[in-house]
Length: 124
Image 1 (cartoon, helix red, strand yellow):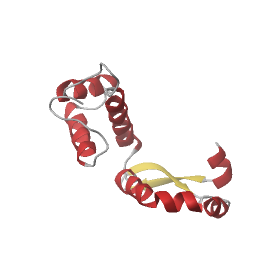
Image 2 (cartoon, one colour):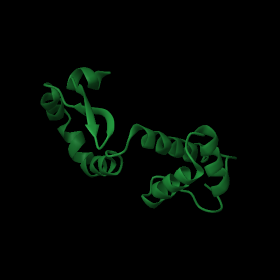
Image 3 (cartoon, rainbow, N blue to C red):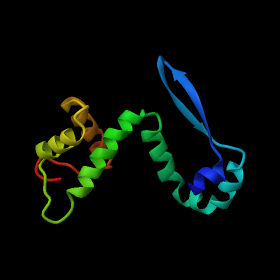
């Protein structure tokens, strides 16, 4: 909420290639906020750029699936929680049945390849 008041973003409807959605653009106070956050931005610039590059072009639906995958993977790290790859994918599918098993598998592979989750054939 603080960021919203500080940056004062605008939400504009957009249509891109037949798909509609929204573009969030900075508001008039963005420069003041960025100036105050300069040290943080400089420290984490590479990581921020990577996240924006990896996830920025995705739709809300694509982000929803990936967020669920990361949640399930992090939850499986608790003591006594060990899922093999098949059980991991099945748990994601159970939480998000609107995604096909192919979509789930492809997203898990993508996140594993990029280093966001640790999933192998034996344990998560």
